[in-house]
Length: 397
Image (cartoon, rainbow, N blue to C red; front, side):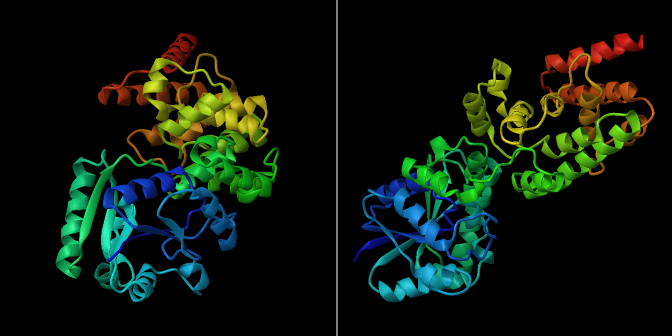
């Protein structure tokens, strides 16, 4: 009797996290074979609009797993019409390997929703469910994992294995963002990256510089998480309204607003990677709090990838902290980010109203409110924000 691992997914694109998961699982479970199965049409999420075809993703996957021991590509789902449901795949594999032990590998998000999948009872009957759980998973997420394990056992008689490991914590969507920012070298096997760049997958042969605003909006929103998109559009529209009120460049305001959070979806390691790639100078505080870097990295991406002018890039650079003696556009973007219509917090209506009456007074009020919140949370005040507040207070005096 053989021990056969099953690792399915869209692999869009296949990255080093996938490769390490295969290696670690084969070793931990002492698998005789790991079947890697790319989905033709994933049922749980739509593929990105610029995704390579199934055949092209298969070729990228072949390059990614080349040389991995005990690893075989399986085209079962690519040959089957319709959505690639795991229950159908496992039922077929159970018929093909009637006497072998099957292990279905998945990540935390998939595991926590397994009971909602199509025919979870078939999945649990055909294979042992293997969760690749990061060692860092603790607290609430750890409790959720254990609760889901007990639910699967009680409802479906599942066999569940939780593998604690240090797999690379990165998603294919993050890799696609890093590809768009020309900074994906450390996330992809060299042969995979070379093929993507040579064939122009994920829009890499398209120029994103000086795009018409509608196309710029489309490109920007593709780089954001779904829940962030309404804020980005709201910020751009608010920036336009403020620019019209205060005589600033409306075109620049719209473009700065739609790009101001363009790198916000990236986690700390990716923010630091962009700083390294583009030579962005950062201090110790920023190294320890890399999620705060999205203003700096976003400014550079606006310049290098989207070809935006200096005024737009500077407004993006200062939109989270402010600084002393800001330009009108810089003030507008800081406030638009703070008061756009989707923002809901105590005092926002006062700042929103004041922004159309006295721009400096609204900026000072917003800075004070933001810093008061940081103090309440026990966080360090940024030097630039303090300087911006002091500058406005002196001017007011």
